[in-house]
Image (cartoon, chains in turn blue, purple):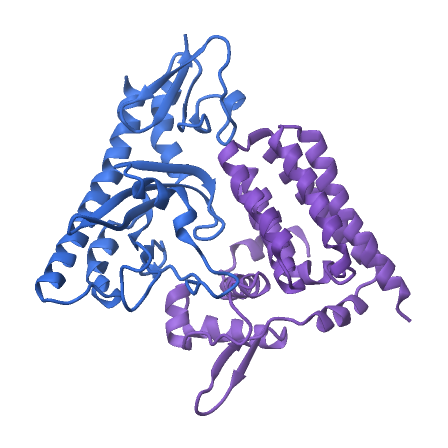
Length: 223
Length: 239
């Protein structure tokens, strides 16, 4: 079905980008390790050309987020860059000093916690990302392992509106009600105002949810 | 301005003012929400301008306004630079003096509308996972031991409720309202009021958790109205 193809196509594209960033991170860790020293925050700057190249209207935030304690010079660290349509990418800055009242504990967020628990491809949201993009967003993430241990995650932010615009042509071609939800039932894109984005689908007569490949998303259509 | 004039204004070149305002708002919000700490040194003008994606001219204009607002302090010479200044409660007192009771009431109407709408939508839309941060903030508030900490967590609570509504616009509005008047709202509250605030918050979370949207809205509105009523009373006590 066309809608499912569009959803998996988009998810595959974002996860392929993440796989590329992950491979580069793992290679970087191996190089540094071969030099007989610990990976440091400054080393991660070498990922920037790759991150910049992959940022755009679709992937608006991208980077590597370190497991706390991994980097000796920065116990908490995000090599995180954001797309800016009017200029070069900007680095996302947030308070990473645990003693500070506004400390941003990123390990509490699902996009970090799920890969840490072993989920290979996790898709979090949609949620109002009031700390980073200020927009209704989706965060895709994957775990990074180096030397046999979990060392952090690679993640990508996608605005819900981009996801929605990508699916709308296929949704509008559907013969009747059709919408895509996340695993918890939150509607992400829909062809009817009755089930608008942001609302929750908890089952309804005449509608059936079909899993969309391995994305964890569902397509809800008339039975 | 006549219609012809308005049309001229529409088609006039976009000046720098809009970008300056965005930078002012971004930094003022971060300072009010204490994402930037009191006394913290801002990056150099060149670095900050590049991070924010604006020209140094735009940034400098914004810094001038922030200095006038008393939110940034610039020191010259060795060890100099721009430093964050978190407004003190005494300054909120001075600000209160500059607002009429009617202006306070009007502000309360606006804030209650935003908070009430956010709570109603949160009750309709929030999933269990989204209640976790709200409950965590409630627990953190119960354990908070300074008024500043309590105030910061109160801000976080209201932003989390707004985020649970799934509306980015309502969330941004909530953040802007807090940055504007958050400190002011806390003026009439003392340490003894912590319990009452905690109860109000818990009732709002429970209404959201049970999906009772009308109760959530009413409670959230009342919570703001009570705070504003106290503020009006305080203002009326002033000579």
